[in-house]
Length: 544
Image (cartoon, rainbow, N blue to C red):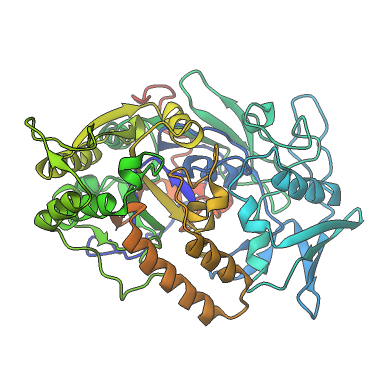
């Protein structure tokens, strides 16, 4: 799963989902540029250290996995042309394509892709000095062996359920990183080299990331010559940039802007599925928040249904636990806790809090005053309303919340590295594995790990491990249902909602199909119509 610094969405496309009429396609011109809007800037651009959705979309354009997943959710060949699984499920052997080359540096010939790169990538992912959310996902592999220059074998510690989709992880070149591990200060993380349809060219002074088509792409040269990712700090500004032709596409439309875009005949509004949710996350290192009664009180002190209706036009679903509602792992029997400020006050009183003369609760001389940190890239109108409502709801039960907005990179460093926060407002986006180990296993507590709140529960740890050991899908579902119920009771997060997802783009873009999780998986087949080059005057869009 990945952190997103924009508002999240849902698998359930609700009433505003529009039926896109298939128009007669005009002649398609090869080339052109597609500029698209993002909420903020990625921290890193490599597929190993990155843990936000902005970076994921970039890496999907730049890199490939051994296998991929097609539009019908079937496993298809990518860097591997064929593969075999051992009868006992203890190994997978991949035969690699021989026509793949790495993106060439300026003035250099492209280097060939080989088995050495696959072995190197796995070893880098698992190196103790590499901080990545992928470690927990690939702990089932015991060793990767190079059988010859174009054959590799993954030896498993144990057979696992539905193993093949896990080999979609992106491969990096052996000659890329400076060391046998990947650090966030390695030049490779900002200047990635891949095998994918697009090559990284530059990050401009304005933070725009420029990618150019790879003419040697093994699937054939992409139809669009250039992709430009433009960062924005405000959803409304990004929407205006689309309306005034300063960008060609937005990856996520603010629900409040849907009617305006629907009414513009120049634009298409396309719903797409995403397994995602928003939440308030708590730092359990703070003794006040380590008390589960306090966290539960905060959850029932806010009216999530009213917030969803008022701030997002009701375009979503309030959730009760750690899985997205569209996921097979979601426990529908666990209902979201109801809004109940009276019960919230009672829970806080039971936890030993007494209201002072200023109206703020305190326990043992420590006031219930907490800091809520929000990345500035989320500083949209809707998000401002969400965090202000949270502050006001909690003030009514005696907690004082001080809201701090900070730049995306500074926010990530404070939350993921230094753990200097009390509460955060954020979102997770998942793939279909529904693996929440990196979020809630105690082994994932530490700098740049996803369990940034420091949640630790031995029973949850045990269930997470057991879920990985079972080869029975129904047993895994049962385990996840139990985890859902436990985490809903423990409230390491106040789970909020999953929202309906929309992308918007100008009609000159042809053949647009959106991957529900990675967005740009099929972008090498997109094209620009007879209008040709992007109408966006470079550098004119108002952004961060």
